[in-house]
Image (tube, one colour):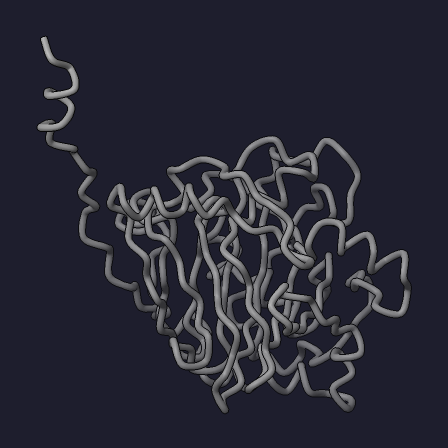
Length: 310
């Protein structure tokens, strides 16, 4: 039997991805336990909820970020993308009790992530990513688990909520994902600049095998919930439009990391009311207990740099 001939004429079977789930839309009666949400998460590796933060909540968040003379930006650090540009970020480990903290504590965010991950979650950290017009650097293709698996987190029961503060599309270097890539397992990552980049060959194989490269388009206040194994990237911002986003990372409570590192172990999350962000009793800014990455402390910066600021 001519095995060479058999292989030559073999038909290569490829996995056909089901059609993507459409974005969900937030409303006061939104059911975070509706089965379609978990189905979308398991199929695509992410879900989008349109209008999760309403316009008044986004305005309050913007006010908080620019309060006291943009005080939060004193914690901003430039992160090298390996291609001649930097993207700025602020990072803190505990939510606190101000507006930025309430975003991590409201049930429509923390409760929904708990449903997706299948158990109680706690706040792993929050990041403000500032990709400014004509200067913002790239975030290379990666899986968050490529970083977090080095921190003593044994299981990939982790996820991030990504909320743009500006209209986001391809023009201003909006986020891109590979739909279904959470099923690939952990890819090898290599260091590029101060970032970890997922194996390009494995990424290409994933696309050849039928996974879908998606350029996301989102409005301010929309929310992307994505799995820690979902491949994602964003390019350099060559446009005249700012592209800032607010990210909250969660870990499942029973995935408490086994080693001490630059992010916290399990701390019970004190859930707030869904109206806590807009509640005038919630202070705009209160940095007490947030545990920022201290950009004026070289030891602090080096600790984060070793882990790619993730």
